[in-house]
Length: 255
Image 1 (cartoon, rainbow, N blue to C red):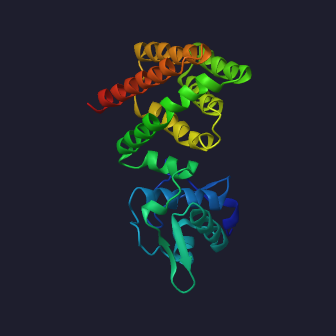
Image 2 (cartoon, one colour):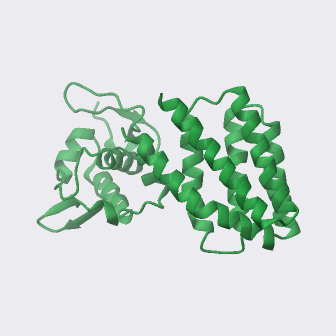
Image 3 (tube, rainbow, N blue to C red):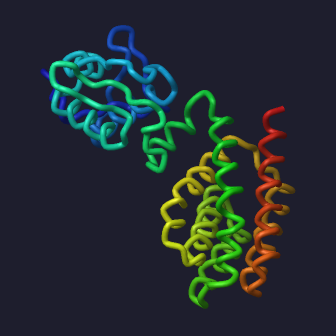
């Protein structure tokens, strides 16, 4: 029986099974073009296709991944929307320079985090956090509303009561995003996607021991307390201590 290409999807980068002929395997379910965009996007970010590279045409992608040409076209459109690719009739699609890539896109950040130089990615995001979070937290201490404070406190409490690393990470993310919202600066909120990606990928990269978690919780509680008491200078300093602790965890894991 002939398979219907549009009912199958490309496996994600973590689960792609290399075949002897096609170089990739298909799995049932999910969105075909999104899965294909995920696979191609990861290959671009990790350097398989350097900037300026002309990518294979629709027919080649279709053959390689055993998907329809329409799925390939939709995948390419997705990558163009993220500014990873550009396309022109009779030329095809090519990889754009890195400086044009949309690094605030969740998918692009995820691909960076899975690339071989993931450690470099984490250091870059840590630098960003040093630039943004201390001042955002100081603003939150000055401007936060009672409702915003309640959200920050609830996330901090949920971190301490979390029964798994996954639920703790979710609460940790909520904590930091709530602080950005409480800063009162609307331009800071979209940048939360970088912090979210950093936290999600950091805990995959490092081993969190019991002592680490307990110490980190105390550092988060110090931030919460200083925001609640509206002490901007102390809140700023508390965030810097938390970021310095994260640096130490990354350095230790590298050894």
